[in-house]
Length: 120
Image 1 (cartoon, one colour):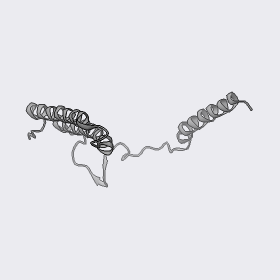
Image 2 (tube, one colour):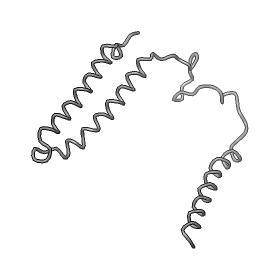
Image 3 (cartoon, one colour):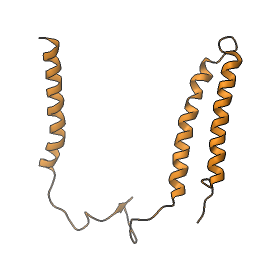
Image 4 (cartoon, one colour):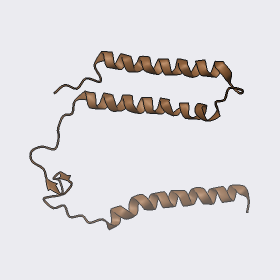
């Protein structure tokens, strides 16, 4: 069996399993839609009023800033693991300091723009 035959078999199996995962639930699922199907379900408690509540943009901005800075801080872990005086010296320390200053300036900018201020 050649390498291309094996590859063709794996691709065919992938297509068959992918197709089966999409089609079999459509064939086996029940078709009945009761009156409660379209209602909002929240932790076993019936909702009062509409489930479409408008949230302030500050929640989303705060979450995006948090995620962005968490990812940036993750870059510091490898540097901290391999950092030693003999290997990197002052150059690496200054580069990390510049990185942290830029992060701090971004936080100060977001703070000055009012992203951290919660209004009701």
